[in-house]
Structures are given as C-alpha cells and as structure tokens.
Image (cartoon, rainbow, N blue to C red):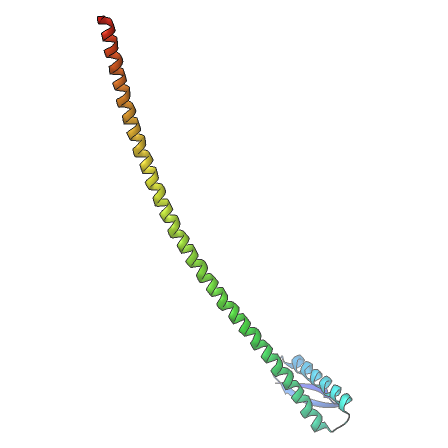
Length: 148
C-alpha cells in the first residue's frame, strides 16, 4: 500500500491506496476539491458536511446522467448491430438467390451451346447430303449431255 498526501478544502490528509494508484487518487481528490470549492463559492459557507453532501449528490447526478447516456449509446450500438446482422442476412439471402439464378442461366447456356452444336452437326450433315446430291445431279447432267 502507498500513502499519499492530498489537500482537500485547504486541509492536508494522508490517504492510502494500492501501489501505482497514487496519481489517480491525487487527480480524483483535486477534481472533488474543485467541485466542492465551486459549490462553496456559489452557496457560501453552509457547513462542510452539507457542502460535502451536496457535492456528492451533484457528482452522483452527473454519474447517473453519464451512465444513462452510455446505456442509450449502448442500446443504439446494439440496434445498429441488429440492423447490421439483418442486412448481412439479407445480403447472404440475395447472394444465394443470385447464385441460384446464375446456376440456372449457366444451365440454360450449356443447353443452348448443345443445341447450337447439334444444329451445326445437322447443318453440316445436310450440307454434305446437299453437296453429294448436287454432285450426283451434275454428274447425271454431264452423262446426259455426253449421250446427246
């Protein structure tokens, strides 16, 4: 334990605190002394006990006000977190829907490619048959021309 000399209301006090907390204790005491003296200047000398009580009430009021604002901010953060989770869920759902749609389009594209390949094969087959037929007709026409 460390001992710290502090001054409050123009009086010296020796307080103990955990090692390493000396500066924090001094800062807190200075803050309390400042608040106390502000009230003393504002209200006059109404007695040390009454001033300490009013100072304490004022500090507790500030503490509860701050605590309430922190809780409100925490609630806002929680609400934002919930909205973010919902947005993330919707984004994932949207992505899954788009993935399914892309899958369907890829299947349709594959089917379209197969149809084109089949039609190309059919076209080539028809072209070959037509060419052979034309060659046969030409050959027959040449034969008839030679006979005449």
